[in-house]
Image (tube, rainbow, N blue to C red; front, top):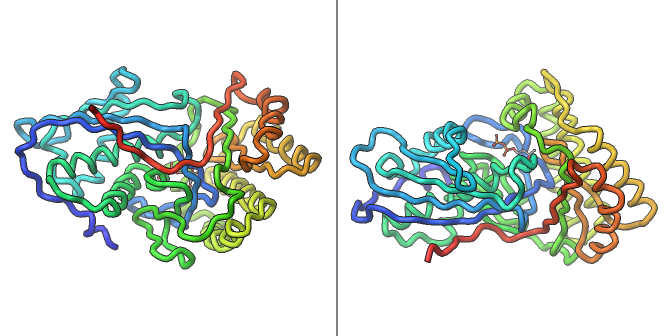
Amino acid sequence: MTEEHFSAKPISKTIQHGKVTWESPSNIALIKYWGKKANQIPENPSISFTLNNCKTITTVTYSLKDSGTDFDFDVFLDGDKKDDFKPKIATFFKRVEGYFSFLKDFHFKIETSNTFPHSSGIASSASGMSALALCLLSIEQSLTKSEMLDEYFKKKASFIARLGSGSACRSIEGDLIVWGNNDIVNGSSDLYGVKYPFEVHENFKDYQDTILLVDKGEKQVSSTVGHNLMHNHPYAHSRFQQAHDNLQKLKPILESGDLIAFIDLIESEALTLHAMMMTSMPYFILMKPNTLEIINKIWTFRKVSGLPVGFTLDAGANVHVLYPKKDANAILEFIKHELVAYCENRQYICDQIGFGAQQIDNG
Ligand code: DP6
């Protein structure tokens, strides 16, 4: 499938206003997207667990306006007008303009809220951009009065979400999503995420992700800047190859339920991501001392208890503690007794694998 497949559909202007709501989850990558080409094309494939509890809920109210020369929208977070969010959304609208024919004809009121605390350091771009992309798709569907096949709707939503934020294309569906062209997953694409098509062992059903909020402050270096530093990065080539190799290695691990091999692979991916940051020019470090304290505690606990607990990191200081549901009681006790002390205000979020976005009926 190419970009043309997602081209704008002509609209009929008999519908002058409407309202649509979607809730869309965040996701956590096991094999990381880090480095991109023009137009949000990833340098390597990635795979993620879709989350269940960390979500953005977005309502878009649209009303036809007189002249259609520019984008016209307002953004609200938890009911408060957020003009500082506008440039990011204007950039997004510009990027997706060619794929919708109605963006300049309507005024949009975008109202959004997150289930996780604001400025928790949790990436809200994946859930936020996917929720907004889904709202635009639903509006397109209403305005064109077309019967879009569910599969096409989801693909285009993922394609549009990607143009807002790369990782957002992995939030439309669950529970394991692959993004980026590769030889292992048939039908994989740089343009959108696809469901992981192979067998997955019981061990990974209901997998738990407890997110330890180590640092809730604004990141010093954004993901976008970090991705760009992979251009001319001394290890870029081998890192991109490694992501392909790791996807190949992950397949038998997911199939057999080998939790030890799984932990080895995902922890290595997390540390490699941060190693890329440390070896960029300019170099930077997003982990904090407490990130390392937590990692060391996890390693000691794993050795002593024999329980399959591992971690991954996103582009920040927070730690995602990953473990199977069957060991949740013991591991949650460990988290509460030994790890929570390293979190800012002792804050953490309990999440688990989820199955993707949902439309909310506006009644
Ligand atoms: C480390 O998707 O936030 O979380 O495409 O510039 O919006 P943009 O970047 P973004 O990068 C996410 C990077 C990551 C790894 C991952 O989610 O795969």
